Length: 275
Image 1: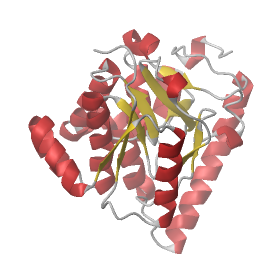
Image 2 (image 1 turned 90 degrees about the horizontal axis):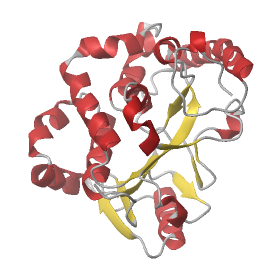
Image 3 (image 1 turned 60 degrees about the vertical axis):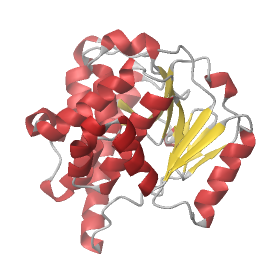
């Protein structure tokens, strides 16, 4: 495995004919990193990549019930095989990426988690995001993530602990997050301590300040367009917002008590105070 991240930008979308906002995001990304190769995969390109590079996973890929899960799975496979930086089409950069290339694997802090399994079982009150990340080709953390995406499809019982306390009305969205999204990423990180030294997490100075959430460190920001989310009806959206706000307010008190700094130590919450 290479020990540094190559100068490659990887993005994906349904078509190469992009709306204005994604075009602006791509323009900023490529202009700030003019020496980087830009690789864009539309739906046809994704299918070809799967046939050529990961034929063993085509059945799993086709079997995901939600389209976003296929996009999630593909981004891990693409960066694992090619190496480089992946960015969603609603991420805007403010700084070049060259100084991150010396790392082997980089993920952003996403937000403080609502997931009780991560908090109670692993002592983690935060999640890492998959809207932007980078790795050297063949990085073992991405290999573990890919294996867990496959496992989550084949073994629903493995996913079940991550769904604890989530009302049935909102389970489809959290199912995605916990089978191919940030929940699965963070669980994989927690359960593979031998990989911690090779993964860099871009923590902000204060994880309890919500203005620091959904940023790729000091390099960029994720606009959280969330086009994949099930909007549902007004009542569904209202109930989901009420539940999430109530749950987050309750758990925020626990996180504030730990302070705003986070180090990359993963231990049971009952025996550690994060500094």
